[in-house]
Length: 342
Length: 148
Image 1 (cartoon, each protein chain N blue to C red):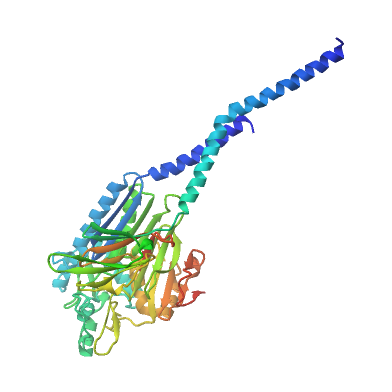
Image 2 (image 1 turned 90 degrees about the horizontal axis):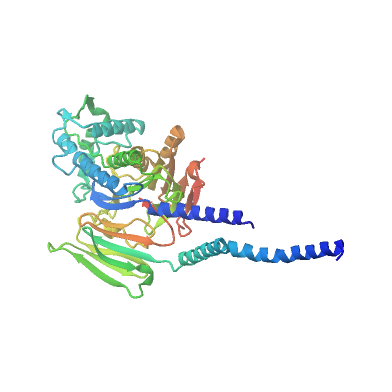
């Protein structure tokens, strides 16, 4: 080995050391807050990450002021108080409402932002669960109709008795806004989780893909994991919030089928949507949970620009071909088999 | 001395000079070689440290204050910790070897209790009404986040 070669070797070794040190020295900031009726965690790496995350927190609180159904002064609460009147709405609420109306149409009502009267009737809004009588459900069903939302410039109007609940879409929208804001602020690596609605920006600081677990709906840890970058990974399932009727012993989950008025019983334990937009993933995961396996797969075949992990009530796991190489089942998951949808 | 003998002597001289050159090469390259060996050793130490015993750290936070940090992999005898407020609201946290749960709570939705035991390879355990969170670090799954 010549002296020159030896020095070149050292130089390259030192350079790689410097790269690894500089990535470690890159500012990292993580925060956890309670907002939007859930726990939110934000982690970001990049220059000025602390300030960027702080602005992200502020943005979340400002969105909570607009989207909350429990805050009396939020835009959504004001609409719900007098739905038959025209209400001024900010661009964010308008954007979400218009998108929600579109998803409702495309999913034939499986997702509906006006399902709130039924959710309340089943007691999920006040944590006082009950099984409403059939007559009550039939009376409330006509109030669930996203197509009845009327828009004029910066204004919205519903019909008498209708009420909004954007819980199945607003978190995804906020995730998208945060990701966009982070990119503009020069953040190259970030992970946001709004109550399990995950968005990963870029790769990890070492260049590797994010490893996102999918919760086992039957308890315990994750059923499997997915490697991803620049994706929203959003799951809907009935296993988090449910109640058992003491008289019949029947269990009811918190996701109401807007078409029937009853808690969803579609044969799906959980649905995970993997796509570019958090808002889309949020709304579609709720819709697919209601639609069931076959209808969801038919929707995927029609659009084919997102990926899915569907877990049936029997425990079988169905994934789309787009993630067949990036998704793997945990060895500990024995409830069912893995099948790639064709 | 003949011309042939002179040439032979010169060759011997040249051969004798080679040996000091080799020594000086080693001397000259001592520093870079030393650095290379040092870097190699650092890598080996790093690998060994990385292969240390797998921890599973559970952190219980209540209203932003860390109340308990426990390595679940080191828990031999289980124990119970109650987290309460002056208003009489509480969560009972049960810690066992390799797993943790909220076994009882006065919260309105009971989601934290329904979640059952966690072995640290899934979502954090969260009681929203009481702002209680149990998060995990370590474990063997290497997950960055869990959706669900």
